Length: 92
Image (cartoon, rainbow, N blue to C red):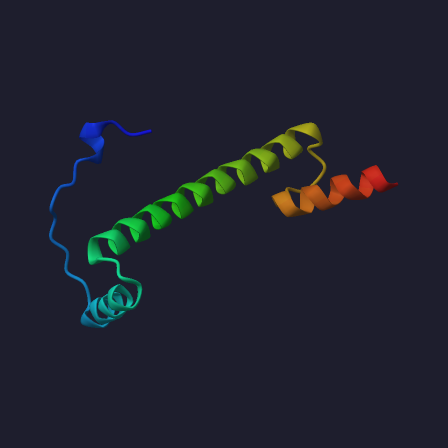
């Protein structure tokens, strides 16, 4: 949750390619929203996606390190490969 101070809006200047402005303006007309709302939602979505990517990358690295420590003779694998391997051993 954010504080009231954090929710205060601050005006900033952006330089955006004309084609994107046209797309945003068409969207605002079609869905009765304003540019600010679109930019805010786009920024929130982008930041959330980047945070998730960082988390998954960190987790994948941790899995590789853990697997390497558990059995140094086994090659490093991706998270997906480890999940497949665990599923295979539990089904055997």
